[in-house]
Length: 446
Image (tube, rainbow, N blue to C red; front, side):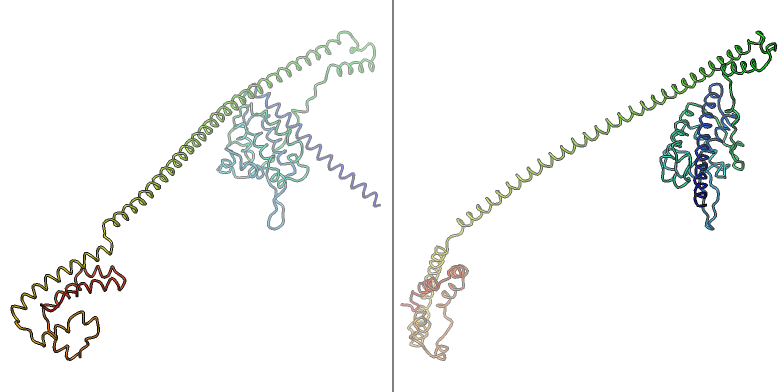
C-alpha cells in the first residue's frame, strides 16, 4: 500500500508539472502568433481598440502576467485575488519617465484590473512595453514575492516574452483610454480560432486522392482524368499562400529594419551628445586643474615674498637696535667724568659764595667774640668728621645759628647735578672725595 501511494504521488506530481509546462508553452506560443498577426495587420491599417488582433493580444498578455499570481493575505488570514497591475506598479516604479503615476491618477479608472489594461495600452502607444516587462523581470526579488513557483515570469519563457514584445515597437497604436476595453468587471478570454486554421499541403491532398482512388471503383468519377485538375488548383493556391506569407515576412523584416535603423540613429545621436558632454567635462576639469595650479604657484610666490620681507624687517630691527645702543653709548658721558665735572662746578660755586659771605661778615660784625669762634669751629666739617672735638648737645644748640656760611654747603648737597653724580657712584670711596674737596676750604674768615 505504501508503494502504491508513493507511485500515485509521483504520477500526480508528474501530471501537475506537465500541465504547468503545457500551459506555459501554450500561452507563449499563442502570444507569438498574436504578435505576428498584429504586425501583419499593421501593414494595412492602424491598430486601435476595435481590432480583434489587439483584443486577443491584450487578453493573452493579461493571462501571461496573471499566471500563478499570488493572492493578497488580509488581516483575517484570507487570501484575496490580486491583479497583475499590483506587480507592475511596484516593479516598474523606479523606471525613468514611466507612466505608472499617470495611470494611478486616472479618474475614470478605479479597479486594479482596469488600470492594468490601461497600462498595456499606454505602454504600446509609448512603444515601451518590452522595456517595462524587462525592467519588471529584472527586479527578481519583487517578482518572486508576487508569483508562485512555475509562473511564466519566473521561468525561461520570460526572456522569450520580452524578445517577442520588442517587435511591437514598430507598430503605431491608437487607443482611447475611456473605452469599453478598460472595463475591469469582465475577465479576459483568449480566442484560439485564428491560430487553429489548418492548410493541407499538396502531398497530403495527393495521398488522400490515392486513398480514395484505391477505395472506390475503377469506373467512378474520382478515377476519371477530368478530376485530376483540383490537385493542381490546390497546389496553385498553396503556392499563392506561400508567396503571400513570404511577402508578409518581407514587410515585417522591412518594418523591423526601419525601426532598427531609427533606433540606431537615435543611439548614435545620444552617443554623440554623450561624447560632446564628456569633452566639455574633461575641458572643465583641465581648466580647474590649471587654475588650481596657478593659484598654488601664486600662493607659493606670496609666501616666499612675505618671508623675504620678514627677514628684511628682522635685519632692520636688529640694525636699529645696534644703532640706538651705539648712539646712547656715545651721547652720555661716563660716570667718572660726570663726577669730576659736578665736583668742580660745586667747588667753584662754594668758593664764590664764601667770598661774598666773607666780605659781608667783615663789614657787619667787626671783631669776633670767643663764642662766635666756638660756634663756627663747632660747625667745621673737619671736626665733625674726625670725631675728636665732641661737645654737649646743649652747648651746640646754644652756639648754632643760621648763618649764610651753611647755605653753600647745603646747596651743594641738594642740587640736582650733585645728586646725579652721587647716585651714579656706588662705592664709599667716591662719596668721600667730593666731601673732603668741598669742606677743604676754611669756613672761618681769615
